[in-house]
Length: 38
Image (cartoon, rainbow, N blue to C red; front, side, top):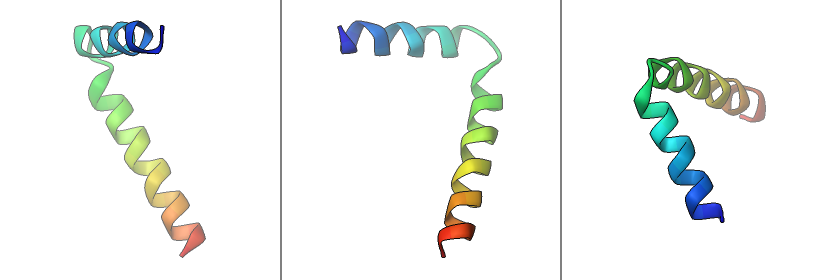
């Protein structure tokens, strides 16, 4: 079930122009967490 869901999400991400947006958000979150934690 996890695999199929993950594949669905990956297909959805690569299907539309959402991937760069998510990458930017993910990088921002990572930078924020790293900056706050470190």
